[in-house]
Length: 145
Image (cartoon, one colour):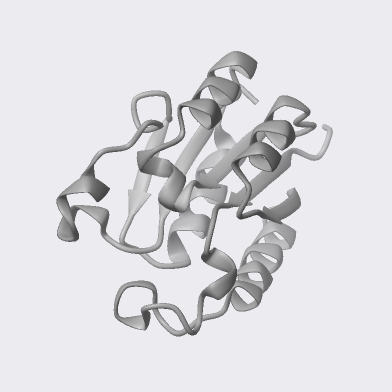
């Protein structure tokens, strides 16, 4: 059986984790979270690629050219604004899980609106970096891969 490939996309400003609003996002840096993702991928025998971008254009191009079986995306601020990323995901018809570090439903009202949730298999919100781990564990057994 071929190794399943997972693409993890971190959206804008997540490169500032560790310093940015620890009340909402915790103290872990993006490097810490990526290390946790990589270690879990090894345990699950997954091939994982991790990308962070502050550019909507770059994220759209990555999605359009995806070479993975499953997508885990934290669209960050693009969650509430990017029809372009939504359309790219919809066009390629890849199974994906939307992840948010903070509980978006306990925050500002605009954060409760997602352009992605209705397309996603599921949404994980408020579990910090554990949300990525839960998404990967789900992806291992997802049948449409």
